Length: 488
Ligand code: AMP
Ligand code: MG
Image (cartoon, rainbow, N blue to C red; front, top):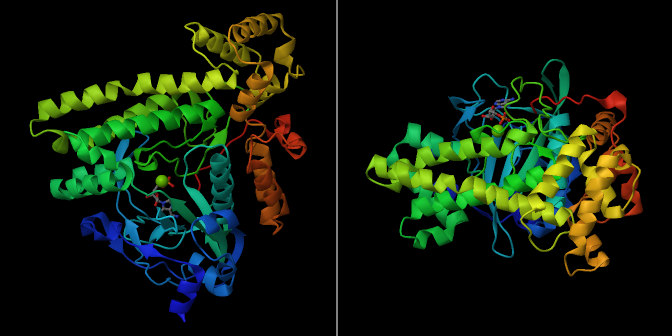
């Protein structure tokens, strides 16, 4: 019986989002699939959520991840949202996803449990509501890698294949990802409420968001302005973390930016190989709008759209609201720069602050770009004091290296402490694009061993274990240039 299975599996749902005004969502169940099979399951995450790993790996557990069985306490719904896609405003919404509810963990934390690829909804537009196996496995790998890197992100609990084929350019195996998130509230959710749902709903959404993510804002003189400021800070911190590891999101539309500050929507994302701010991987980003070097600026633009949506709540007088919002937005770049500079100092083993640190960093980045140096491996090599890279043989670099050594000598910390700090902030491995592709290719042949090995070296990317060495190699020339396709 469903009830027994739900209790046994540890599901403990609340549905606070479903208590918001109904214009924000549509209640509906996932569309069942014919022959689901569990292909990936995240044991540590399941345990942290208070779920029973044994029960979930049974056929009844798989049925939940497939949308074939609704666990007790779940009230499935698709969320409405809008968003600017490549700068153009559109009505969107969960076109192929169902929120099952919010799992309350034994520690009392609240996480959205969402199925992605689980069937059509009122927001599907022309889409089939389904997802292909490759992109769902890709999201699993990259989101878990981001988690390992210490970057706020949605996570992946399970992937099931559906036993059905879906039509894209070719026929592909269908799959469903179970996504776990602090919430699925997006900048686009606020745009939807502001433009299409009315100010009462907007206020209910803002109050809900404050309570769920920024409770300290409730006590502020102007809670909605405090919400805006808190989100600006969270995103500035997130963007700095992306830039510091060389992560290119690829589709920073406003619907793909969370209010919680977690990374979401792993479609065409990829990590830098050689350092070049103009790097674009996505095949549909023809203008380079979402290039690596443009990401912090795009986040600022998206935050301005968030601010626009909040204006009616920030002040009764529009002119005053605009002034307050503009002042809040003006803090974004100083915050971002501070987070980035702090992170870069750590990557270079620098503990204290000197005015000239920015120049030292800029000089290194300029050399990396000039010598087509691999981003991750430059810092890895500096950490390990390994001089094999081409960059390290140039006279210009040797000069830079001398400057850096003098800089390190001007602080109290020992060489061992410097090495330790660098190891904690320079990953030995990232999910290299060719390694991800290799894992997906094997999985397409039903061999998940390659993918699981990749996941295991990415669990602690700062461990510097011998197993990680092989995964640090940059891509062979045959794997370049790398192109990604929107994850559908
Ligand atoms: P994304 O590019 O993944 O952020 O998705 C943009 C929008 O397209 C969202 O509203 C998705 O729900 C929707 N969407 C993407 N793929 C499908 C699909 N296969 N069927 C229905 N809607 C989809
Ligand atoms: Mg999206």
